[in-house]
Image (cartoon, rainbow, N blue to C red; front, side, top):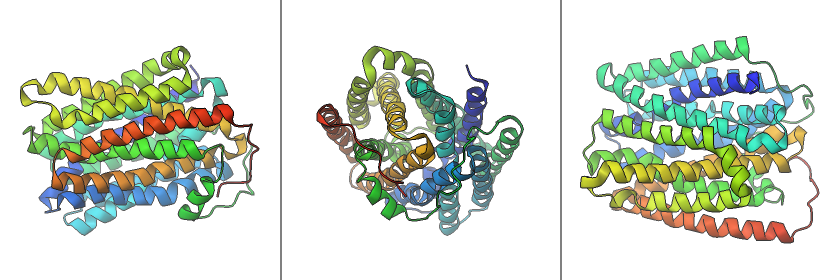
Length: 400
């Protein structure tokens, strides 16, 4: 394997472990600060609002100035946000810290663009799966660590631990990760116009359907992600440590699928079937969550988690691979940044909707998310029918 991919994988893993620390902590701590279920969801949405605004900018900056500087700057901003979180003893401070973290979440876009720089098109789905595997490993180690630190050392050390991880990661990137972009597009303009850019991107036939599929799938997944800690605590009476271990189980499954199986799955089934099967797995895995009886919680939760990991593993790297194949080399960072931006829009809609639905009924976020993924299955089928009947598209101008 390319040494640069190994270094990039370790960089992303360490960063996402720091991010994963907060996954079981935020909903529970927000409740301790007297946040409503709707506001718990809105915390995830506000984080994603900032990602929506800034990820296309980070992507364009990475095309203009290089991938490694963007990764380092994003890590620095994240470290500052985590220090602020350590002192967030009120809801306004908690909200500000999460928004700052969202603004600094540009390293994944730069990492995706880095992969496209150093891998041929036919190997990109497997290489993109490394990012998914790093997400999975971040889920394995991050949430249990966050729950342990929160319970034993207090909320401030959750922030300090994540900040320390970011600083160490910045040093590692500076020391070991070489720049991958050798032909920088210094004429590319950097604009903070997320809404206009999103509308313009939807007019580009090369990417429109893929952006929308990504939006639908991430909306459904994030409806679950922001509320499931509350469900496990309210309906299944899990402790903070047990909730952290459940997220770790999600991470193990994701790492297995995206780190070890995605290359074989793509060769065996092809991109079209992976997207169809992934949508179906997500629909079933999400829909069954609130119907798991307490007597069979562990066994059936493993089934649900496995389906979610398989669905996510089929969809996410495949979408990234197809996007990168459709984009010219000079616009890789911009296109992948725009995809992250649509993902951020989905993470605005999903947590906000999920938190409100959870307030009405604990069943609704998961039943609704399963139904949304059935809609995604239908849309994926339509996308490939349109692709089969379409003439090759000519590449228009920049998205932004």
